Length: 336
Image 1: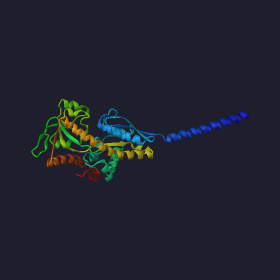
Image 2: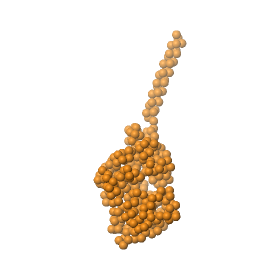
Image 3: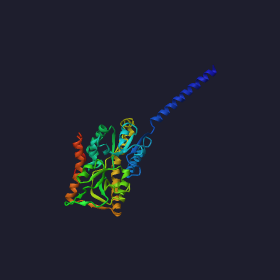
Image 4: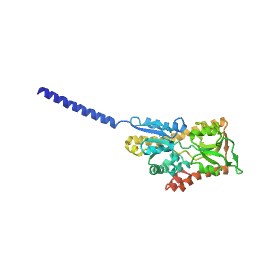
């Protein structure tokens, strides 16, 4: 009987210990750091991917012990124009890349393409909230941030472009590497848009199989295209349309603390990335000029006509697509 009581006390003690351990484990699990797997539309060495890394680092710093982003790769994992769908399906949690890759599904991406307003201003005037609605309705993902704004695109050519009598540029017959956001604008200048994947552009320029390219100013040196592109047409036009999106179910499952950290980091890094890239733009501009790139600067009425042609092409494309958000987005994102 004595041994029996002793055994009973041992079993009871073990049960209490097991319960205590379970409670400790459950408490630890509840407080465990949550992890998001993220990818980028660009290779990691590019300036844009490096900027996204800055966003990741900011979230990880602010969210230590609460939320962590694991930046696991780029286009080697999924083709860039299929990445948002991978996020929607939950294969990947988070993605950074151009909204304009999905123009066919979400024409509202042109609000960013044709914008001359910073991400910070758009958060304040309601434009960003409207874009969140568009991303949710059309792409099935949650929009977190519009990073790296303030970066414009330019037309670059191998040879000096002809000028028109009114001071503009005549690109008649030139084959210019393009993408859907440029096509109608380039055609209005007489150019022939050519679709060439980014990895093949260097070889195409080297062989002069086309005559130039549209490209953001900050990335022209990243891929060494400036080795062949010796002329740049100013002013710049459009604006980068780089979004950070997350899977809705994954977002809903995050703790309130994690959501707050990500939202605060998103707003903060929109300004940080804007400021960072203004410095990069100035540095890149000086470097390419010092290395011999010639800048064709349009002025006065010729410059205004050039810019009207660019911006009008983006807003017309969205209006023609029948976007129900056209009026709100135009008011929020365009004030020329």
